[in-house]
Amino acid sequence: MIISGTIEQRLVQRLQDGDKVAAREFYALYADHLAGICARYIADEEDQKDVFQDAFVHILTHINDFQYRRSGSLLAWAAKVTVNTSLKFLRTQQRHEFVSLDSDLSDEPEEDDPPVSDIPPDVIQQMLSQLPTGYRTVLNLYVFEGKSHKEIAQLLDIKENSSASQLHRAKNLLAKMIQKYNNDHHSRL
Amino acid sequence: MNEQWRQQMRQKMADYRRPAPEVSWDEIDKALTTQKGSRNWWLRIAAAAAIVALAGTGYWLMQDKAPEQEPLTAENTTNRQQPVEAQSAPISVEIEHSEAPKMVARVETTPHATPSVIQQPMDTAVVVETAVSPTTITDTTTTDATETHLHPLPDRGIVSSPLGSDKRKVKKETRLTAKVYYGNTMMGSRMTNELYYFSGYDFPINLVRPDINPTDNNNSNESQPDNSNAFNIDSTSHVSTRRGPENGNIRYHQPIRFGVSLRYQLNERWSIESGLTYTRLVTDIGSVEHRHDYLGLPLNMGYQLWSNRHFGVYLTAGGTIEKMLDASPWQLSVNGAVGLEYKLTNKLHLYAEPGLGYYFSNRSKIPTIYQDKPLNFNLNIGLRFDLK
Image (cartoon, rainbow over all chains, first blue to last red; front, side, top):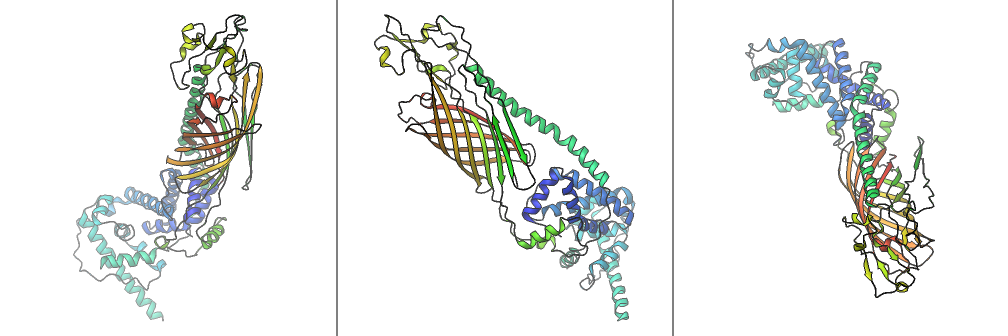
């Protein structure tokens, strides 16, 4: 549940004072959302737990770097920390996956955008987790963090056109999965 | 096309939640404890030390500027070693704070009742503020939702509004703050303006100290009372024509002030404050002690210049109208101060307010320190207690 305004501000203040009860309230309020972000970036569940714990500790110990600006900014900031922690993990653990596709530029035909509108969120999440790490990371950064290919290239230390091609491939894979899902789904009806 | 799809995906996944993995609270608490310890304690100690140093310096300056002087009266020319003590009043503050928005603040002051005169009024103030803030909460749904969720664990699967669509307007917090304080004012008061009488037997010469501006810093010479250059010999006037009785050197005790006030936060920067003050002035005229009690009504505006999580700087200015309780005079004064505030914790603030005050003449015939030293420096040091 998202809290806003005065209550959010007060929670920030208590977190900044090192209030341990506030830390638990923060968990109760935001952990699910942040866990969702971890899951979007990291496929392996054990890794997700590790990254989540790291992100959570980072949020609580760096809460003094956070300045409350507007309603919802605590969650926005916490989400950003979680994304960064996930990326850091991916960079150290699976760096090769970004690099490996560098030379493998796009030669697939451009397909239409995957028709996601009728697919439930948890199914999409499931599909995202099946994407190769490199594709998934680029797609996440592009779609959910609103990064440009230039920014993604810098973040992941890959070439700009590699970012574009990985996004392209991610979307194609996703489109295929959706098609398959729709087929399975409709055949059952 | 890409942009549209991006939006579609974002909306789709905005509410996506996943049961959070269990976290190791041991590790988190440990991290919090070490982090808190390493990060804040030195900052807090440094700030507290700075304020104490500032206060100490102020006190020392006041002490230093007012060297022990013996009034040059006929009596004590033969008895020069009259000790003069200036003792600071030990002040203890007790704050009892319960969970409920109810707070008991007690300020105890036990000024040492020194029979001799305190010549160097120092200025200290301990202020305890109770703040009761009727916080405005945006809407009831938010409150309810939050309150349910502040209990151990939220219901999984509750779909909340997405971050981006949460555009409820947040009303500004309006805050009412109460404070109780104790303070002394330093009335620039060395004995610069005192009247000295030589009630010589057959030598009716009135020696009047040069009228030195209380703010003037060049008064250090007056520690040599024998320096006859420091006196104007006014041979034309007679003892009886000057104010005060014979032998009547006037001495002012340290004024003591108590007050209660309420502060209303108008917006983020401006606040307005009013309340009641009780002030006791003690004046010795000759060997007779005169007490004057004042009840005052202050009105101040505050302006927050800057603040962050640990410090705050503000300006405060206003006026006070005071009524002497046992006589008619009204006393009007204006004051202005710069406030430096250090937030010891979320609720406990330590502050120092060096400032200037000016007391207007009220044409009273009763000699008070206000009339003699209209311009004074004051330094308030206090604690402010905030209850959110």
